[in-house]
Length: 131
Length: 385
Image (cartoon, rainbow over all chains, first blue to last red):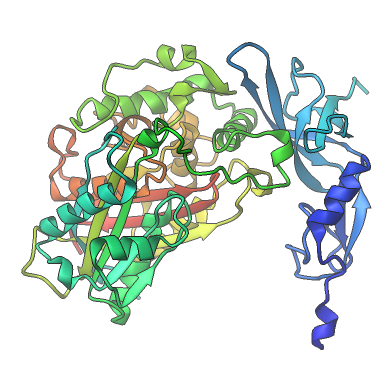
């Protein structure tokens, strides 16, 4: 193997991640070597070390792995969720409905909130209705 | 075969600085220096004999250079391993290795923080939060969010209850009531914990560690050197380290920490089992921590930690003494608590723990935690070889 073989397919993962997220996508990487999902995005696969990583977009559907609710001192509050997306990776996200329950184990559907130009776009999840 | 490191190094001196809230005219290195002076006096070793420096100070990128300069120590071996609150238990391991290899003869482990006072300093912020960029948009509040997510998952998987979490805080307070240096000593009930302000479900303010000032220091040598100095030495029988992630969304399983690996490594080196340990000092940044560590270190089965702490089992008079100084929840927590777990373990093994002394304690386990359940380091100490 020569050094040239190790040039990452994606040398600047944050920039590509941010650009794709700004378009409303939930980006992650697929490793062609071990066939696993990689998130957060990296220059090499944390599972097998390969640099052959391809960008993909999640459909945004998954299961709440854990959840905490942070009440504000002046009323209201917000959820912080860990969601296991069906493509095989976990993200931290917010909730569309701050009054909702977001029970661990429940199905949720996520999207990217790009509506606030002052804030970083965020992953927001809504409970899926009974299927 | 006995591990070559087992019992090869000893702790000869320990000390804390003034703790609690020290006032605006003092800085982290002042508290660190005060603790170092105390630990060297305790060890009967002069500062000029120190040739190994192990330190981590929050917000200082070059802690060892700051600390070496302040103390007037130019070490031949220096280690600035910074893995959050577990750093100092790691330093004990590294010091034992360095002493055995001959890289130094007197190892000094030191820490200082004015985290509480810093909150009140005009124009001076507490050290900047490190938000992993792929989590920041969800606005977690570090570090409580990560631990709350772990607690919520533990409750979901194993039926751990809110009351069981509260029992950890109550046990810590009961120990603190026996410790004159503890920051919080007023009576505390399970109901008090449950009815306090919710910070991040399932935690209220009383599930969360204190924010205090404080410094600590430890002096180590080889077991076969400096034998004429100080009080009775405490042997380092075993040590083990492990870390698995930095940000909570990267933790493989929120209900199992790498204390499983650090504990196994420490017990293997020591040649002991959990049943052999008389007293435990477990880094309790939040009430879920001791529950997770009791499970992962092998004191009860996975998922049974909540039931294990019920009925005052880890409180004074209970079957298993845990966090006998009052812990990070009630004794002191300046940001990186691990050194205080070690100091309390040493005091218990020397029989120096006053009203809170565990009768006849000869073995102790001190466990450090860093980041968001990220880094786990276990040390097993004994007054006997």
